[in-house]
Image 1 (cartoon, one colour):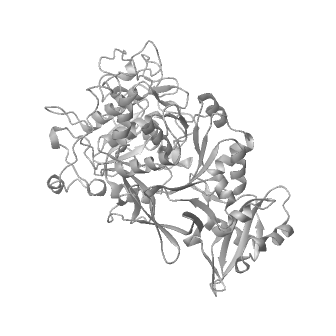
Image 2 (tube, helix red, strand yellow):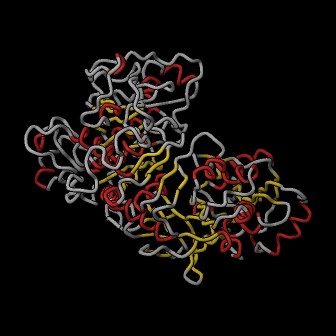
Image 3 (cartoon, one colour):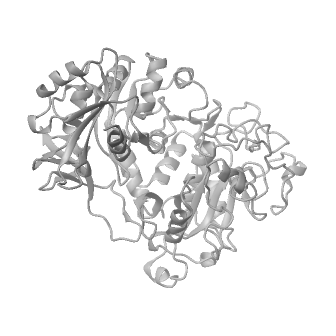
Length: 614
């Protein structure tokens, strides 16, 4: 296993270039050899054209002297470069920020890996951010490149007003940090708003000698806009939706297909087109990219989690920390050639590529039908989304061996339905700063009498329990630092845990602790047991502070299931909740308020809701 994410994937491609690496949302396949060729093409384009002599395949990391000479650049996390260093014309240099706005799909995988391979640090452009928050993030990361879909340039430029009326807020992709020049690489057809000098993915990906004829919409002049009309439909497309139209289809003279996305890349499945195991560089021979100078310490991504406008909180992961995290995933369950991992999650899709398995990207169809058609062996789900799926499809495909749950705690009822669906069900405990920390099976979690079982720390993961019960985590998978702060040695999880027989048991969130009559009450210690009672689908405990005394009323909120009876519930609570933690009030609700892409329980909103009901 490589200690660098890019080197590991390229090594996998070198071993079996003809094996299927990715299946896109429409079921089209791309081989490892072709994936490596595309990543290398993007890396070469973003690195800059060498003036003389061979270009370094993955570029040396600058030494300390060169870094000290380049303080004017100020890229992500203190790493620096100059526009003309090493004989290149304005190419991306190690540490440069890359504002990234491409929906999940093959394009996104290729562009992300290519940008990181070129030395870039990905900065995700989350739609919907308040302008001042986005501005603070751009100031903190100072991107040198923008990699985005052409449609998003239009929605953040000429159709900005329409997008905002539809509730969509996007950064100005043409000029994310006014006064700081950036270069652009886009995917999709040229649309109004795309900078005229921007690089286009479909042209970068053409193999040397590709004789695909140019249509007027794909002029050889990279500054000439293609004759493609701007979107005029009244419905603004959702740029957060999954992209199912990546350029993996057959070659065609028209570089924009009926869906408006590039389709000029070589066909990954055609028997009459180029040989995907050998297109471009021979990934199994002497022409394979030279990865000997890759630095595992190079920042690869900045993931913003929280923080004020004045001081945004960005988690900086390196190529090495990401590779270590992916290795931990692979250590928790078998994964190798022949397996098919159905997910749009990078942290499960990338381990698949490192292991020589096939990464299956979901489309717009029924998830169970897609998994069955592709022979999926592994998948990932957020508990609330899995619950919806299992209510429609109680039994999952027979090929599925592992179902991973994460991003939020899974209620017992969901765990039981998941087990009945067929596969081995594993719950992943992780945080943005440390992916992953521990993994427990659904059966183990259901057998836990008190608290929520997280599992034993994965190999190499260090844990420390503070005096107040908070869990601290360390290990090679730990993020390098928070943006602009000192290197991290360990991270405070904010979770209160205890260790039982070498396994972590979650008692609750530190900030969720309730104080009543001088007694500390940890909701997570009791919620799983309450949710497991007959007639209860989900349960959450919150505290409402008295404005004068600060003492908190304890409220148990529940989502009733069939046979719910509040009287019977009250009678059952003393057997599973300590007397000092018994609720003052029970509030049945139709649904819990949730937030974020993972639909996590929003406890603040829940407190507001039960306060109003009182």
